[in-house]
Length: 296
Image 1 (tube, rainbow, N blue to C red):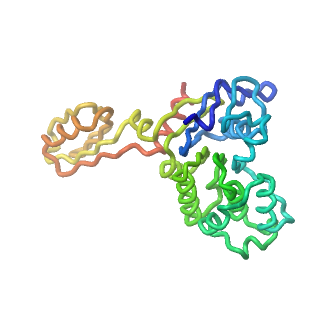
Image 2 (image 1 turned 90 degrees about the horizontal axis):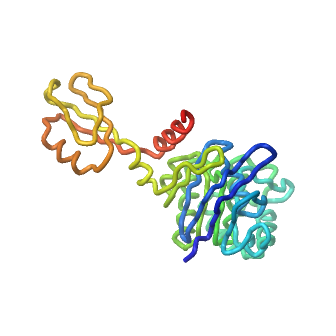
Image 3 (image 1 turned 135 degrees about the horizontal axis):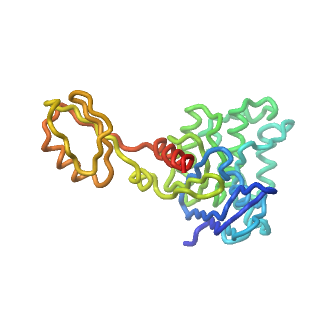
């Protein structure tokens, strides 16, 4: 099956400012793709192009087999949560959801299930939107995006302002959609959420893609931390793929790159009280990528 999202060499400028500088981005059917970057990196601009709210200055865009800027059919099969959704405050929650369902020309077949997972009950939906807290406004923003079961969900910071219980429901909801064959592109600053959900991650900075791959692939490019507690504090330590970070008494801390099997074989030959191997977290991958970019 062909990709549901294809950006090829896409550029976008606002006056003298280059928001996107020739980026490539794809999302496959049934994939959850994380889109990571600091504020101002270009994530929101790319998402607005994908849903037909902005036109590119260069490159090509294909979403669900069409051009979102010109093809209204494409837009009807999208679900979009902007970073700051503009909601009609005088409408009650149910009225607002009905309004968005009418715009999509699709039945809100997932509303009940999504409301349950996001802990949004009938009394909440009966209230005017202007009375909602920030978290409730975020929940109804997610609901309007997902309720009509779109083929492609594009979500800009969907976990923003949600408490842990609701965030867990959001994760379950998005996994359900992926398992049903839907595709999801979402940005997030909650890296644990990204690690729990994403098949692949794309990293962007200053309008350029600087890294892409599965979380495992990106993590493999970074060093594991190996912490040894030696029986003999003076014993020599030479391990394959390791460089010394610190040695204090019988405690030795090393950075390890490469295959783990030779490391485990060598560790088995050492006389140790304890050993700990810490896998790289997505937080560390993210920080290393952007630290390297900032000092380049």
